[in-house]
Figure 1 (cartoon, helix red, strand yellow):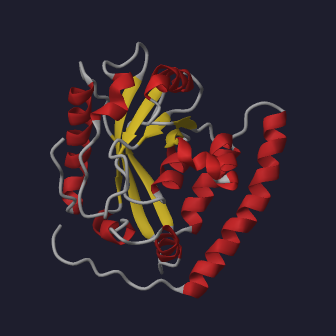
Figure 2 (cartoon, one colour; figure 1 turned 30 degrees about the vertical axis):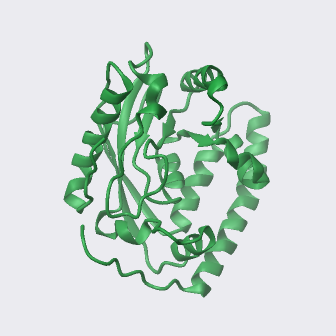
Length: 253
């Protein structure tokens, strides 16, 4: 996909309406989640995130065999919208940078969905962080990570960082590793995060985008690798092939 991407100005009234809807949905879902959690397990984080994706305009469908058993999801990363889209459809938790712990509401919401926080700069704590991820994989929900390490501009698939996959090459016994391609079709450049755009502006542009967008989650067959580089390449190639019909340019690992 080449050329200049034309980004339509957001509708501020629509953004305001959707933000109000998100606040109202949180006010409904949070108490119901806490009640359900007090009685055992709660499915409300997944329901909440699916609702966030829908309020933001995403219309999600899945293609491929459903995610089952202890599964690590490896996905491409185009937008913050990827998180509610993927979690709402698969029920997954996420591996996230430790910096999110400084944002109280976001941190609380992430914890309710089972997020595993990692500090990638803490080399001495890698073994403990690996243990956290492996334990999380044996809960009832899948675990997802974005090996690009950042969001893209929506026109290309960035290289995968093998270091982020070191705990899973080769795959631990009983764990499936499933690439998932998050496909916005021809609208992908509208959802990317271009260089120089602030977080606030990006959020308003997404939440104020008119209309809806069809998002397909391609649930691809399991992959494996004897080392992290092989695993990164296998996952990258599978996702790149799934996104190719939408014009997303692949990158070399």
